[in-house]
Length: 420
Image (tube, rainbow, N blue to C red; front, side, top):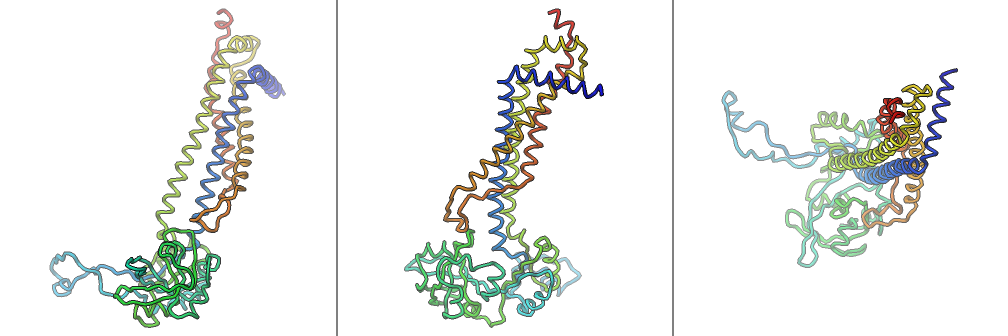
C-alpha cells in the first residue's frame, strides 16, 4: 500500500513540474512526434514502393528457370591422351553444344506432375535486329505457347494494344514491348524487317503492344508463336531453350532448382539469382531508411535530454526541498523518469497517428507513371510492424534520454543546495 502511495505522490510531483514547464514539455513532445512521424512515413513509402517493384518483378520472373548454358570443358583431349601427366591448356573454348534443353517437351510433361508446381511454360529465345531505314535495333523474340505463358506470367492485363491470340492466327507475327515499339515507332498492323543472327531477313507483322513496367523487358522484349521463332532459328519443332516454372511456394525454388539441375542435367536459376541486383538495392535502401529514421529519433532524444537537464538546474532548490522532506534518491529519480516516459509515450502515440494520416493522405494522391503502367497512386505500406517499431523506438529514446538527468537529480545534495 505504501508503494502505491509513493508512486501516486511521485507522479503528482512529476506532472506538477511538467505543468510549470509546459512550454519545454510541449517542445520535447513535439520532437518525439516529428521523429516518429518521419520514421513511419519513410518506412511506409520506401517499403510500399519496394514492395510494388518486387511484386511486378516477381510476376514477370519465373520461380525456377531451366536452360542450357555453354560450359568450359573440364577435361581436354590432352587429359584423355595422357591421363597420368600434368597438362596445361590455355584459352579453352566452351563446348560446342546447342543452347536447347534435351527432350524439353518431355521434361515439361514430367514437371507438370509435380505437386509443388503451379504453372510451367516452355519458350524459345532468339536474338535479332530490327531494321528501320538504315538503323538497326537490338532485341529479343521469345517464342511461346500463349496459353501456358499467360498462366505463368499473367500477360493479358499487360496488353495495351492489339491481341496476343493473333500470334496463333497471323503468320510471322509478334507482340512488341512498349519501349521498343516507341523507339522504332511502330503500332499494331505495321510490318517490320527482322534480321537473324545468321543474316537472314524476315518480314513480321506487329499484332500487339504490351507493357510490364520493367525497363529491361520493355526496351527489347517481343513475343511470337513458338513455331515462328523456331523457323527464325531454323531448328526443329522439338527445340526449347527455356523452361519456366512457377511454384505454389516460391521459397521452395532454391531446393527445387538444385534438384532439377541434377535430375535433368541442365543449368538452373531461381528468382533470387535472376533478380539479385534488385533485391540487393532494396536491402541497401532499407538500411539507409532505418539509419535516417533512427537518427531523427536520436535527435529528438537529445532534445528531451537537454530540456530535462535544464529543468533540473532550474528546479534544483525544489528537488533539494523534496529530498529534505523525505523523498529518497529513487523517488527523485522516478520523478524525472516519469516525465521522460510521459513525453515519450505521448509523442510516440501522436507520432503514430500523424504518420498514419500523412501516409494515408499520400496514398490517395493520383499518380501516373510512364514507367509503371499499373500504378495510379503512390504505393504506401501500412504494415503493423512499422507502427510497433515506431512506438518502441519513441518510448525507449525518450526513456534513455531522461535516465542521465534522473541520475543527476538523484545525486543532488540538499544541504549544499539550500545553503547556497
